[in-house]
Structures are given as C-alpha cells and as structure tokens.
Image (tube, rainbow, N blue to C red):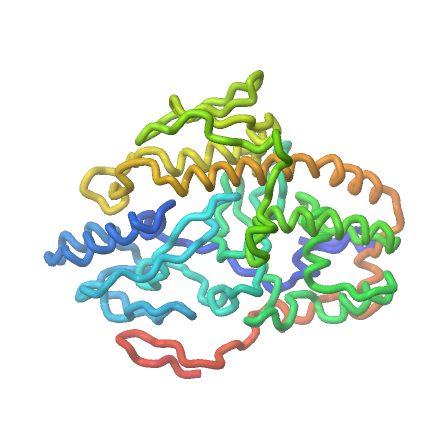
Length: 403
C-alpha cells in the first residue's frame, strides 16, 4: 500500500514488525476449556493403530504422524514423531482465539500447521499484541484489538490482518516502533513518549484503513493517549494488575445471574426492553443493549462467543467431539466479564468519535514530516524479527537447535 506524503502514516510503518495469523490446520487442539484438551490428547495417545491415530490427527501436508518439527519456544513438549507418542498431555496455554474470546491451546508444534515460533519467542508477561481485524465495509466496532496472551489472529469476517507485538524482545525490550519515532514525538510534545503510549493512541485513534493520525498538538495527544489507556486496560481485562483492576460496572449496573443456566444451553436470546440475556432458561441482567450490539468486523461478539461453547456439532468419534458434559462454571464468570468489558468499551465510543472529529482538518504529523526527519522509509531490519535466541531450543527427536 502506497501512502500520500500529506496523509497520516500507516500503522505498518509505525509498528513495522508484524506476523501473519497462526494457522492451526485442525480444530481439536483448541477448546474453550482445558479439560477437554486433556481428554482429547489422552484419546489420541491411547489409539495404537496407526491408521486410526492418523484419522484422529486430521493430517495435512504440513503435519502428519511422521512430521519432524522443533519444540515451540518456551514450551516443554515432545519432539518425537506423533506416530510413537505416548507421553502426558502438553500443558494447555491461554490464547486469543477470536475477538474478546480467550480459549485454550495445546502448544505442541507437531499439531499446528503454522505456529509462528517468532511470536512464541517474545510472548511473556511484558508483551502486548496488537491484532488487526478483517475489514468489512460499513461494519462497526474496533479495527484493532490488544491482547496480553498470544493471539491466533483470527478475524470473524473479512480478510484477517497482521499481529504486531509491542516489543521485539522478551522482557519488554526493544519496542516494535520505527527507529527514532518515539524521540521525534517526545520532542514535538515536550514529554517522553513511550511505546505503550503510542499503542494506547493507536487503539483510540487508529482507522479501519490502517492509518494512524498523529496530532501536532500535544494536548490532543495527551487526551487521546489517556483515552487509549482506558481502552487498553479493558482489552487486557486488568491482566498483570491484579483483581483490583479487573473491569467493573458501577453498582446497580453490574450483570448478575438471576436464574441458573441449564447443563447444556443451546440458545442465546436478548430482551432489549428488560435488558436481560436469556441462556435457554438461564437469565443474566442487567445487560446493556450496547453490550449486546457490540460487533467486530460485522459479527456480534456475544453471539459468536456463545456459539463456540454450545454442544459440539463435530462428527462423533472425532477428537473435536470430545467436550465438557455440561456448562462449566468458569464460562459463566467469563460471560459476565465479557458483558462488562463490551459495555464499558461501548461507553467510550463517543469519546473516540469526538477525538476523530477533532483530528479532521487539524494540524497533523504527516508522512512527509516523518520522511523529512529521516524516520521513513522504514529500515528493512525493523520489519524482521530480532534475534532472541539466548537459550537452546529443542529440535526434532530431542536434538537441540543450533543457535
């Protein structure tokens, strides 16, 4: 994509290193609950006949029972051929499967067609991932999401975008920002601009066409970054800050379970007049209409989240058909928090619209200014991952990868 020098800079130029979405190649290594993954793995390794085990795996050109692959960075999983695997289940990890939908994944490289190891190398408690959402003309909702856990990069509709880590190295080291930009912005605004404040601004002001308008006025920047930090805290759900920073609606507006859910609910219905969400005969209220209407790429978030947890429609006898016998209690807590997050994000939309309106026709830092300052074009090295191999990574069949 080319850019007019008088236009706002592209996100791809401000945060230049990006990675394509993960490609699992099969659905069974991921589930909304970890217990199902352990049961699926146990069923897989108990199957001794190779033909039956192969059918359970769902082989692709990238992954078969005989594929030889390295261990995923940071994970303690086997590297022997799956044809001989009989060991314990890999410890499931949390992953962002779809917008605002965290699920569990078996982090075994032998099960994932394209796991993007470069992302796993920099995934730690200091990392934040920016995830581009598929563009759907006329659709409402955020074009960018932030996640503290590794994102799959899935988009509910439209062509999926890219995953942009905030930092290029573990431990929050080396911001994934075009060189000299943070210093340039610090000089323009008269105070230090950090990578996280740039991320916050991008969440508040980034556009669906993947541009990020940068104001010339430091007061506008301060207003937008403060708004962006509130958005960021909601996207991350207070992760890393303790329970005190978990999203909460004011008393009287907090959603509660008013009637218990059945063991296997199958239908989600919203009553706008009563502000009530019905989960079959189960009932949650109050649920603001803005939370129910919240969409990403034209898809209603609550409906998609629930659909991923309804009784499986997978073919009997497949691993994906193995799921919980009933509705796990943690899902109810996750649903209540999701309603809260969506309601609070919807409340911030008017401020985002005011920010966007104020930027129209106002003085901005353009691509031309960044070129004049020697910041653009982006150096090729900034678009490639940093070398972070400061430890051995296990290769196929237990051999160590060469550094």
